Length: 169
Image 1 (cartoon, rainbow, N blue to C red):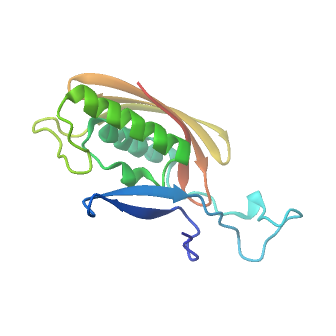
Image 2 (image 1 turned 90 degrees about the vertical axis):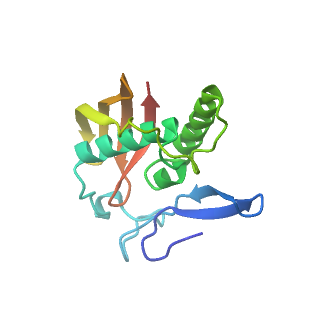
């Protein structure tokens, strides 16, 4: 489905088992500057708007959210706009493996965070700009008496940051 106003990722909802849980599949819809086309018929890269959010803040928010998804404290569908479809599938697989290890078998869409765990706390963010529209970063988080490292590559995708690569350790 295409959102003609924003031109961003729009989830398509498929209901399973009587409409209890929804699975979100998304597609990338290109957004071009109005009236600007290059020889291929696509909008020029330099004419697209730059992301207004500080990349360090975007990296820390995404790393925190990814760790919460894997632990079952956040719904994966909330990250659909911020990650590529490949990363979305990888996070879904990692979340399912964590649920299987946990032994509870509950789905993260329906579960609540364990009491006393709180949210992950960002200890350090190191972001290195590759160019105007690409940032590579490492984020160190403390969560549930453990320290986790998250590495990512963020790309300015038409005015907002989107993760092209994401590794949670």
